[in-house]
Length: 252
Image (tube, rainbow, N blue to C red; front, side):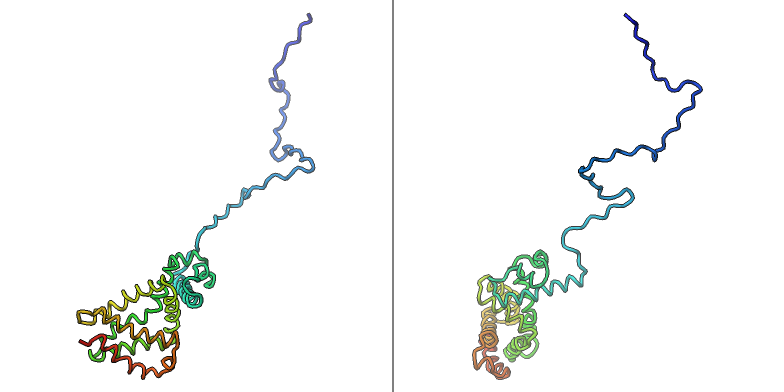
């Protein structure tokens, strides 16, 4: 057999042979072009020199204290209009939000459920009437009925305070849930405080009878608009009602 020639390992250039210069990175051969029809490689979200943008924050944007108060007041005003026009049953949180130009989540954020929205609207609407107990204590005892009647009718005669009261009262007389909310607020915020001013054993009953006299007149005059009560002179009306209210509060 003919012997095979020995293998020689690559030990680099022979002594005295000049070394080949290293190839610069920029002179490195480019990658072969992709054949036609090959889709482009996906682009990275950011370049090496471009910092990634901050992620968007989710959820409701923060409002300043003044803007927050204005938004809440706007929602409440719209809610009163919706309850007045549609009634309690047909009014929805989504409908209130749409009419107010806000997201329904914002209505829930400020007030909660529809019942809680209605309660807030009731409280806001009757707020001027909640000063009635203070009126009872401000003056002679024998003129309590007149002061009470004049104060309550004064709230109803003022268009600014009458409009929200009408909206709430219309809802309260057509739906039991709305009536329960209205009744609870009136009892806790008005009637109990009036009764506390009456130093008699059956003070609560007296306060409720006096309020019933005034609320009944207001309902017939401003909501149902029964004539001639609806167009009667307010001073004449007070003169006739005041003695009855006085009797409920102070008669033996």
